[in-house]
Image (cartoon, rainbow, N blue to C red):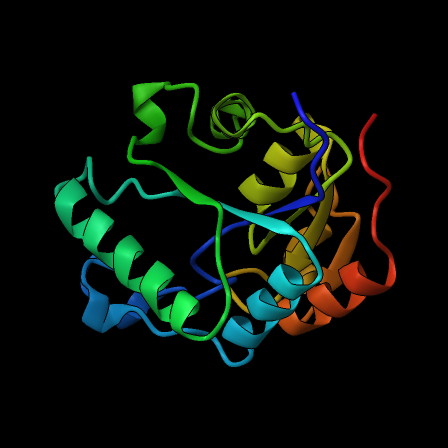
Length: 192
């Protein structure tokens, strides 16, 4: 595996608005329901320009629940990547788990299967890299995979929620802009 300066991002609540109660199925089911959070495009652009390889890791159980199809998920992803590219920001790859908890797959966060797959497919080593997410499963998954976790309060989680968690994030920031400010000021050493 080659040595890479990489960063992992969750999608909903990090890059785009977490749909929560705003849509019938609580998932982004079409491109018209996808809204970039303020500053997220610019933040990804800054990471890209600083030489980070950006990888999205996201649970999308709405597919297996029948809320939307895998084709619709792919269309949303392609539109997201295309919009980012138009703004000079690129993502290496986006990985999605379409399973529910009851499926007991290895790829649904807080399990680490998608991170392992990214390392294998992209030929990278990511231990010690950052994982930016907006929920408990992100923090648990990042911790389990040896990543430094940054929890954003721009999604479904509040600071009060974190008090009850067994595994705490390494850092808490209000939004992706705040997290990227920190990352660019405090880059992790590359993994040997």
